[in-house]
Image 1 (cartoon, one colour):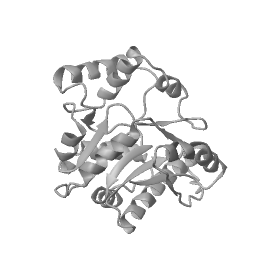
Image 2 (tube, rainbow, N blue to C red):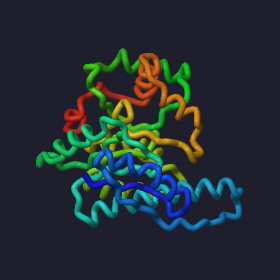
Image 3 (cartoon, rainbow, N blue to C red):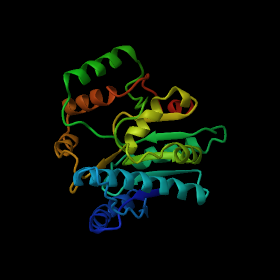
Length: 254
């Protein structure tokens, strides 16, 4: 599968590529790097931190857009898109192989986005616990079914097909709104109900967060193991879901 990795043309991007590239090569998914020119533009009515945040959001969106354009221009049917601070887990290769088998089905002709990675909040709040409990009681599906509808926060690992790339290029353009917020909004928009937006309950792609502004307690939480940690992670993920738990095949072909 084509693997396009979002990066930056600076020392941070170089350091991330050097420390994480070997993980992807071992997984058989050596990345093709994509970056965009993102000059700093100062809005006089905003503070410097606010301008820096806008620059970051704009640069992230524009680089993802560049990856979608590359997917289309090179005439690939689908691609894995990640960010340069990501590390695949041991079972990602099998998941990608299954996705490729499904995409080879000639009957699948609709935009499709499969979110393989999302953020794990550092703690579970009472509200999120109650929402997750509601979904556990309302929706059904075998435990082995690992996919749900509705995307969650995070754009550091997803698979899209060509039709979805065309749709995203024509729809997502606002640099003042984070790209993952735009993903979430699209996945919940009834106008796009004929498209496939699906998310894996547990991430197959993690972020090392070594030089990230993201709360580092996320990293500590994600690295925990054991039944209780796994259960809390699933509850947190279910709190953003809105469907029965599905197998990958049924999630894509629904």
